[in-house]
Image (cartoon, rainbow, N blue to C red; front, side, top):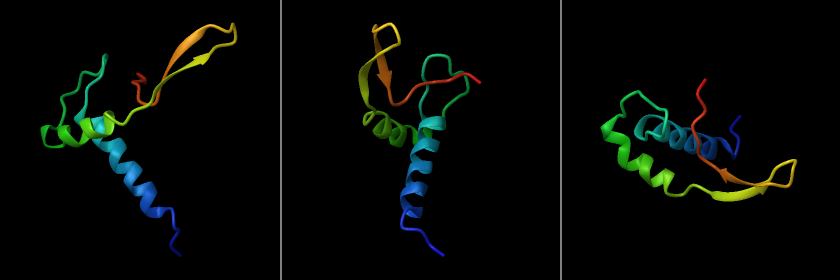
Length: 70
């Protein structure tokens, strides 16, 4: 069985892979894969940057792409 969303999910996976290995944000120490840096930059340039209110009604930045150290 084939889902209509399968192709879209695969594209999202490829975009995430490109960002993970072709882009370095503050705190990321591993080297990039130079052959995918241009693709990573294209994905990164489409990022969302906005604002939200926290539980104290303080305005905070909101990013669609950010680094989480695990």
